[in-house]
Length: 214
View (tube, rainbow, N blue to C red):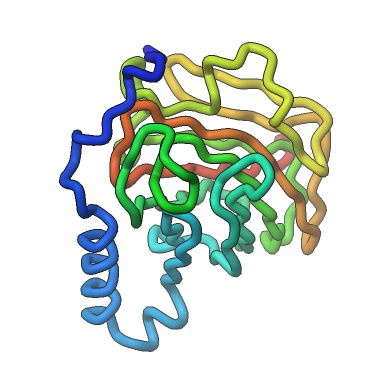
């Protein structure tokens, strides 16, 4: 993946009022859906300069907070109901600005913590994250989206339940946590940094819990 320097950012790739437009689209979609469906199936949580949605199914977001800095990361709490991959939809809700103030602008630097409840009924022995700029397509060489690929010795990747991790950047942007376990009805925490040097208004984080085979 090409990882440009600061010049690779852009604050003019999109119109200057994305936040209002994005919020309007989300509001319109929620108004069109039946009220019981919105309440029971889809939740959109806004925090910092982003919104987070479980609209693609298979899990539920139960909380969101933070602005995305190292001291105040974006914290998303979730409940996964199976041991199959699920996809978190992430949208910008405020203007994109390179190195802009976190919380007021989508600046391409997102310190994350996910607190994930295993409600699948099966123990998970690995857990993988994958970034996608286009849904169901691998994050390609030049899209600028990665798990902090420029940092060869990251010290911000951690899990409460797994001792080790592997990062893979080609042909996918994947982060695999291994050597651990999450038992049913237990919660595990994952911390990492996502960077997006050619930002888009919408991108995706696939979460794939792994169960024993054989």
